[in-house]
Amino acid sequence: VLFLFCAALTEHKILFLSSSYQRLTDACRALLALMFPLKYSFTYVPILPAQLLEVLSTPTPFIIGVHSIFQSETQELLDVVIADLDGGTVNVPECVHISLLPEPLLQQTREALSMVLDPELDVADLAFPPSTISASSLKMQDKEIRAVFLRLFAQLLQGYRWCLHIIRIHPEPVIRFHKVS
Image (cartoon, rainbow, N blue to C red):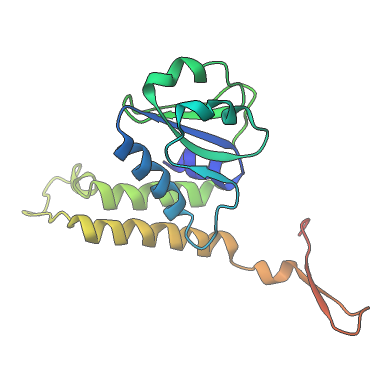
């Protein structure tokens, strides 16, 4: 999930394959929901009809879901990250390089997600584990996952104001984002 999240943030092509239309829709929507403060502005098609499979060859980034019966048509795509939801695999072509999160944030996010999704792992190695560990309800688990990603964005974007520069040449000052900073 973190790999697909980073691929979406860095504007790569992402293709979901599954035999379930519901699973395709849920996976595509979940990936967009994880990016919450940001909005995905490229092509987004949760279920691509068979007649439009040539859209997968477009040069622009996308998040698209395709039924797994068309998997043979997706094998020749060289620059697309393919997530097989039925098999639980993510295939990244050799020509695609996805930048992951900076190291302290990546490890913290993995640990936080692990604590939300499987809280028993935290106490599994203890000699005297607590007697009961309550698992969160699905609704609460959803909120906890959203909180993990919101905290990640807050940590990633903290100090962004140092990158804003005011240009006072015009009658009205213009704020510009300095990309190098």
